[in-house]
Image: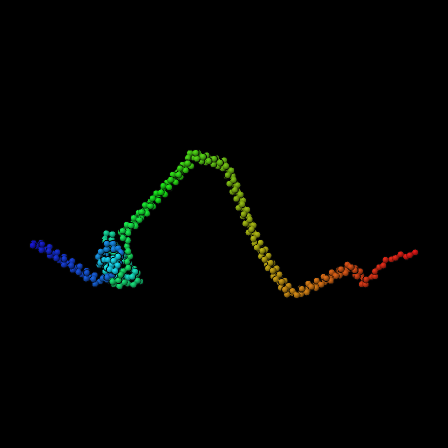
Length: 311
């Protein structure tokens, strides 16, 4: 063996020893500072042992095994190890994720809640299923089918809109045709002639309206001045009238008090007046029947008719 071959063998041996040492140290380091967990998924999405485990997007460990579940073969059991003191809690959720677009799948664990209880080593992490490629493809097919139906519907509606647009354009062409243009031009000419003829009258009418407006403003100002001048005397008269009404009200109250106090006496007085009235009525009747009673006390004898003497 030549000297170059011996040197090459020696260098390769040194690199092998160095690589073995580094791998051994890393395994020893991770084996003493990692905590095992497991989770279950129905779709692993190509996840393999050695894939990264992310906690909140940070690499904290590796996937150790991916195998069918022992108790439920329809689920995929994923064994993983994460760094010690990783705050995996009861609200953390494991699901498929990606480190980057070009890399393979990874197992992503959400941070959960700081108030939630920490999971003990060896516990099962709750999982959330990710959509598989087949499910995504099926949804894409459904979306495509719906899109085809929507495109067909829109195409039919567009045809109807196009037909309506053609009808509208035809109506516009009919409206804006030469006969209608001539009619509109004649109407505009008539309007121009009317404005030219009646323009001076309109101007005079406007001047008269301005004059009337000015007179109306002056009249309103005069009325305002009159109201302002008479407002204070009227206010005083109203105040005096209010005072008089208050005095009359007080007088009526006093009269009511007097009437209520002398109610019995007033009744006696009314009764006496009634008796006196009856006496006056009797006296009047007596005077009508015997007017002489005013002069004589005794009634005279009845007068006899004189008789003729017999011859």
